[in-house]
Image 1 (cartoon, rainbow, N blue to C red):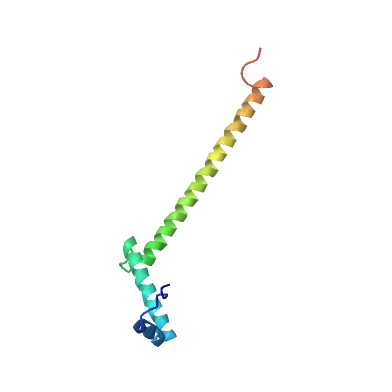
Image 2 (cartoon, rainbow, N blue to C red; image 1 turned 180 degrees about the vertical axis):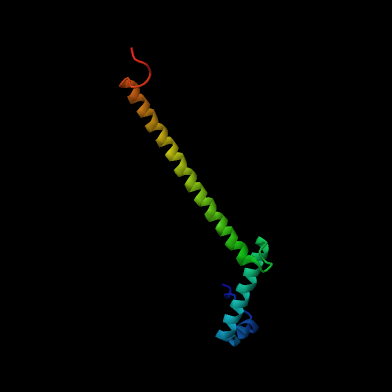
Length: 101
């Protein structure tokens, strides 16, 4: 049987010397760098990212409002058309319009 692989002593010593505050600082810097790289990848690294994202959210909200309004308008037009057809049909049936025989 082979011995389980162990970490080199230097690495273990370095890990033991890392304080919690240092580890937290290291994680913060890594997260910041990752966020900066992500923003750069999206083309939002020039300092105007917050404004750009706010504008995109506003545009998306306007699109959703317009889509909702379009659906409401379509439903109103169809409903009005059906009611008008029913009224015209009832008027013809009651011989109010369409010439009498």
